[in-house]
Image (cartoon, rainbow, N blue to C red; front, side, top):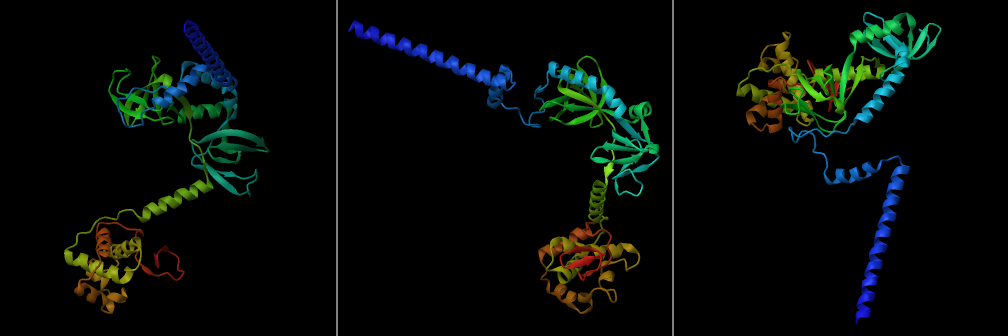
Length: 372
């Protein structure tokens, strides 16, 4: 019996020793693999804690403490890298030397296609120089500009310092912006990772003052990077897109409400039902907007009834269809809604005064109608 018990204890001890050996073997394997990948051992364990205790999403807890994802060593490394490249950056900087705007072309030739523009006080990086022309990169814009319209070297640096600005970018997933340079100060808001704001001053005490929604706020210097920014040029594609968006915004810009009684609302809804009852909602609002644009224009009667029944204008009004719909009262809610939107100043066609069935005429097409 004693022999059996002794044998059992021996087996347990051997099993324990084997387990420890296996544990150490696999632990070293994990560390070795991490080392091969250039990952510090501390980062391997940190990954586990990040999964167990994830960062609070931005905006959930205004008073949450900062989640620092930057370190002094990383910041020092970044600063050293920036310092080593500063000389080359100074010589590669170019600035526009114009009063308004200059053209950037595809090749170093005045007859070449224009690929974009560089505005006053904008700058970029010099890529190449050739026969009085310089190839530059400014934002997404890459192309050639005449040297006579550019500043280089010290002149470019001087202008950049005058018109550029320092940007502070958060390197934390939730960086508190405080009312004073103190961990105990009121929190004005939170910056998410890669969110940037204008820098006011590096206080030199571990805090940087920033412009936060037109207020002076303070962020921890160790949790941000700072960069000097200058405005860049625009590609022709970007200009076209911007103008298109501006035009679209103009088409839906509120044109001001007009007071109307229940009868006028009903009359406008009846016309919309007759003219655009089978059209999308945007098209129904558009018909109502045309009526209201005419009321405001000065070239037509200044009342809804006067515009709708004007000679030679709306066929359903002239042939009695509008009257029958109005009297019958069977006007759909969607048409009342569109009529009310038009009375409120809403429009999907800007200041258009005319519409007809789409027959290829130039204008804004909505559904089966073209507006102009």
